[in-house]
Amino acid sequence: MKAPLPLTTVIRPYAWGSPTAFPAMFGTPATGEPQAELWIGAHPGAPSTVDGVALGELIGRDPYGMVGARGVDAFGPVLPYLLKVLAVDAPLSLQVHPTTAQAEEGFARENAAGVPIDDPARTYKDPFHKPEMVCALTDFHGLCGFRAPGDAAGLLESLGVPEVGEWVRVLRAEPAGAALRTVFEQMLDPGAHEIRAAVEAALTGRADDHPDLAVYADLARACPGDPGVTAALLLNHVRLAPGEAAFLGAGVPHAYLGGVAVEVMANSDNVLRCGLTPKHIDVPELMRVVDFEPARPCLVPADQGEPGRYGYRPPIAEFGLVRHELAGDAEHPLPAGVPQIVLCVEGAEIVLEAAERVTLRPGQAAFLPAGATGARLSGTGTAYRALPPGLLPASNASNVANVANVANVANVANASDASDASTASSASS
Image (cartoon, rainbow, N blue to C red):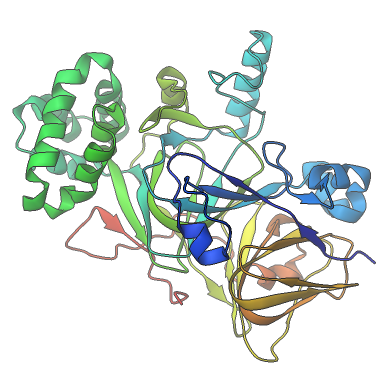
C-alpha cells in the first residue's frame, strides 16, 4: 500500500509576482521581492521534492506504483500535469500555447538548428502541448480570446483616435478570422509605433471617461511603449470571482492581469509571447500558432457532488481539479488508481490519510500515488486536488465532475459591458 508523500515545493520569483500575497495566505517568509508562482509537481524546471529527492525521480523508479498502469499507458512514466498557485501583481506576458503537433514540430526544428534547451531565445522547451485551467482564490482577472471584430472595432472607435481608422474598417468589413489576423499582426508591427503611441496617449488621457477602457489604460501605464498594450484591445476582458474557473486551450491568446489563483496545466513549458514582457518574443511563430476565431472565454462550471466537494472538468484528459470545503467530522473519500496532488489553501489544517496520515496547512501539499488505497480527506479548511480525469473509470467520474463536456461554456456577467465575462456558476464560496 502506498502512503501520501509530503512535498517540499518551490516559489518562483518572477517580476510580475506579489511580494505580499503568499506570506499573507500561506505564512511563507516575506523576502521583499516578488513571489509569483508556487510550483507543485514533477516538472524539471522547479520540481517538488520528497526528503530531497525530486518527485519525477521517484516516479521514474516506480512508475506503475506512482502514476498507475493506466497513466503509464496513456501518458508515459510521468506525471501528466503541473499544479501552481499564481500571485499576479502586474501583467503577465501576452501569450499563446501550441497544440501537440505544433510543439513536436517546433521542438524538433530548434533541436535540429542546435538551439540549446536553456537558451532564453528558444521558443519550444519540450514536444508537448500546454492547455491550462485557472481557478480563482481571490478576485482574478485577465485577457482571454479574441472579441468579436465588431466589438473590437467599437472599442477602438471609443478612443477617438483617427489613426486607428483603417483597423476599424478592416474589422467591420472583412471576415472575422481574417480581419483579426490582419489587425493583430499590424498592431504588433514595429512600423506601427506612431499609431500605438496615439492609442496609449488616448488610453491614459481619457480612460476615466470610458470605463470599458480602464483595464487597458492600466496596461498602458504598466507597460508603456509595449506593442502588447494596443493588441490587448482585441481581447476579451474576463473577471473570475473566488471559486470560478476558466480553461485556455491551444492557440488562445491570453494574459493574466491581477489576483491569486490555482492553476493546473499539462506538464509543459511551451509559451509563445508577443508583448507585455521583457522575455523572449517570437511574433512570426506566435502568428503561426494563434487561433484567430473570436470566442468567449471557456468558463468551467464547478459541479457539486457530495456536500463540500466541487469538481472542475475541462475538456482535456491530463488534468482536472476538485475543491474540497472541509469542516467538522466530514470525510471525503478519494479514488484509487490515479496520481493526485492535494494542496491546502486555507483553514486550520487538512488531513490526507491512506497508509499513513499527512497533515497539511495553508501552502503545503502532498502527492498521493496511484497505488494508494482507502485514501480520504478530513480536517477544517479548503483544499484543491489535481488529478488526470482521463484515467478515471466512468463510475468514478464524480471525483472530478458530473458534467460530460464543458467546452465552450461561457456566460456574460454584465450584458451592458460585453468586454467583461464571468461564470454564472453557483460554486462561488
